Image: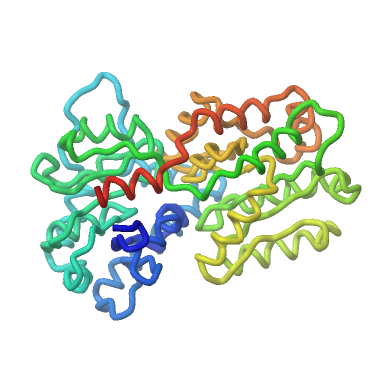
Length: 398
């Protein structure tokens, strides 16, 4: 059977960009190329929608509150303890379910998610969820096809494994070897764990070669250096973007460096960028990436990456884009999950921690001249797993 005829339900959630970004490259496997958002599909029962909405609103509130001086970090730290990843060593049994996981299953046992599973059961395709809750719902409510769960971080908390992992039939796609090993500590059977890598847009060797010429010591550059700063789904760290723009303003105006600010699908973030750039006199020189819908945004984002030399972002799922040969400038992580992503980037040599954004014009070009970014790009392209889509397709369809 041709791959184009092999179909699977691709189920994400519209809470931040990570789970949707993981699903987007797999959309070609879905009927009508449509990714389903478990928290916002046509006909979702109102009670189900309200539960999802409370979770999303709370997550975004905490993410924004993180920026409040002193008290914000304290409150976020308390919240983060509930989703923290424990130390990997010493290796031990970590299968005991957390309070958070028990609460999730309590809602599922009361019917949360049953409607969607009944709809999907009308066509029993493999189900690939990029968030753990839809996978738990599918198993608990009796989905009849295979159930897969795609992890979107370099390490994973206990929340991702089922309540009784040794008895679960959920299979996992692990983006890193550490995730695969971690899931075993949580009690997931080894036969249900597959190291696949993260699904990425196609890696272009031509784009990589052009980037390396731009990052390397060559005297004749193919184009000026282009930097992209990407904010998170809750609009976190948008202020850093303007600090960068202000610091680089003279070089931007002189045509020595290009800057792209990725606002995502948040109108408020776009408006903030436009307003601040206008005050700096950079509204025509700095490109702002924005779309009202997520799929066109991802398409525009991936296209912009082809001419991006350095990707500056907090260590989210975008950490895996280092495999495209993109050096990652690491903005401060928000939460335990991103701390582990940061550690993964640094240990592999795929990324560098940011300097002071307000002094970008000073340290950025020193680091460029010393070859730091070229080294990260080369290591990422050579060592990073780029075959996530292919690996996932082969496992699903044999």
